[in-house]
Length: 233
Ligand code: CDP
Image (cartoon, rainbow, N blue to C red; front, side, top):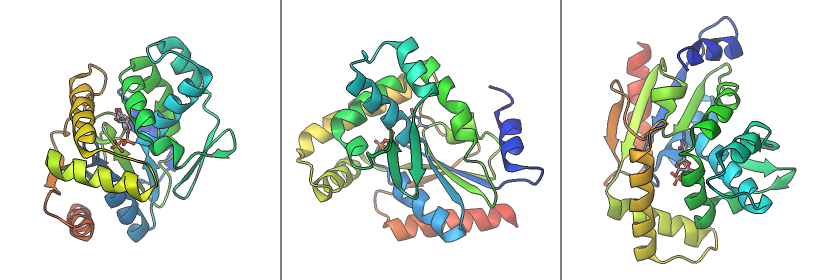
């Protein structure tokens, strides 16, 4: 895994490709902040969580047990998926909303704990590293996949704020939701993501920490852009 960033340079060509990583726990706001920062800078966007969600969905649909590491890694390596803007396709079907359902989210955090699944997705993630730049959002973007990123941000927010956001997100998408169940699920997911041996959720030592509990999305985006400008200067 030591040479992943060299691979990133290979994908990006001879010139340095600027990379901003945004990691953090579930519903910390990283997806929305990453999207807006990428749009503002005209950079590509890697929503790495979507890849784990796609593997989970493909596994669930194929009747693969969520602890069958070898079969899930095979699925992950050959995942017939495509990204178009923020839309996500699996086998040609638009699954952008389907992968956001809570059962797929739960399953994705289980498959993401399997080292062979993570390994099978590395190359696919590195391919996003293209000019004019990349904003990568996930759990291990700054620690494992892009360790030499130009700017690393780790977003946090209180459990209350995150459960409230997730509730709103699900209701807006037409899913039903219960805030207490969501909170419990979020805490379980945090524990699994932080305690797993493979690429656990933790800030890179050189990451900027941003608590978004009391920030609007715009304020979060503004802060990340300010840090990026300072890092480039
Ligand atoms: O929306 P939310 O933050 O809950 O999840 P996500 O970013 O879509 O990621 C779904 C799951 O994939 C997470 O619960 C993590 O377990 C896993 N994941 C990961 O392990 N590494 C990443 N780089 C991104 C996501």
